[in-house]
Amino acid sequence: MNTLLPTSTAGSLPKPAWLATPETLWAPWQLQGQALDDGKHDALRLALLDQQQAGLDIVSDGEQTRQHFVTTFIEHLHGVDFDRRATVRIRDRYDASVPTVVSSVARQRPVFVEDAKRLRQLTGQPIKWALPGPMTMIDTLYDSHYKSREKLAWAFAEILNEEARELEAAGVDIIQFDEPAFNVFFDEVNDWGIATLERAAQGLRCETAVHICYGYGIKANTDWKKTLGSEWRQYEQAFPKLQTSAIDIISLECHNARVPMELLELIRGKKVMVGAIDVANHAIETPEEVADTLRKALAFVDADKLYPCTNCGMAPLPRQVARGKLEALVKGADIVRQALAG
Ligand SMILES: [Zn+2]
Image 1 (cartoon, rainbow, N blue to C red):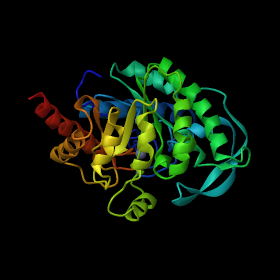
Image 2 (image 1 turned 180 degrees about the vertical axis):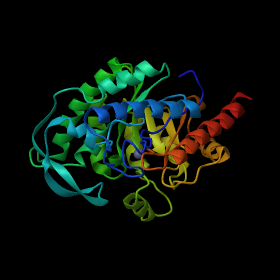
Image 3 (image 1 turned 90 degrees about the vertical axis):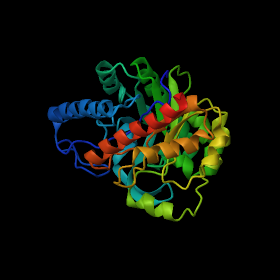
């Protein structure tokens, strides 16, 4: 990136109400068959337009073609039975009915590659594509085949690598793996979590990112945050190993978070997507609030490695709130950029 402080989002954006139920996770589609396919592609164009009108430097598909950031990818894989459900505790936080791994997992065909080609045709801007990370994938399934979280994670890492290589060939500039589970399972993160993430990114020549956050602004997450005390030091567990990993960019939640900013010193040298937009409330940040968070991060992140971003995806927000937050992000980054240039 030649732009100083290039702006982007963590991933998802709200979908139009004619496509999916608004302000809902796992929102049911409102269309079927060909109309649904067409609707998803129209929504992808609108999500791109919203990002461009706000002035973002790195754009994405806004995850308009997927129902959920993890489930939709898994739905396309062989070896997972969506009719056989079991209740598991996701990220040690809330119970959910999830599908069962019944045999060896495999990717029989590309999942998002056609969508990525479509986005590539629509813009010459750098594009970022989000995939779930191996550890976050295993955490949303019941496994009756591998009987080992680690083995299943390695199997998913290979599948993710196949998809990522094809996304790269389709012209994606940054491939991001979403690993909110890195904020929960610290021993596993260090034992094999980061290793499986590197396997997923193996051989890629485009840039790679990992997004680690405290989740969407849903009640289970905001309730969990209330139990974390006055300082959130979860990042401290994964950072030392991430700093020496092959991953280029680390995407983090920083705004309105109780994450001590000095933890970023532990990943000095990496590019950091600094979350400067809170996705857990509807209040639109002022540009000055955004700038303030970015300035605090600049004490620990070199200016040429700081990428202003959102804390997490914005799928559950009203569309006009998300648009307002995108504009605030761009204007806030502008304030800091001008100060750095001056
Ligand atoms: Zn997130």
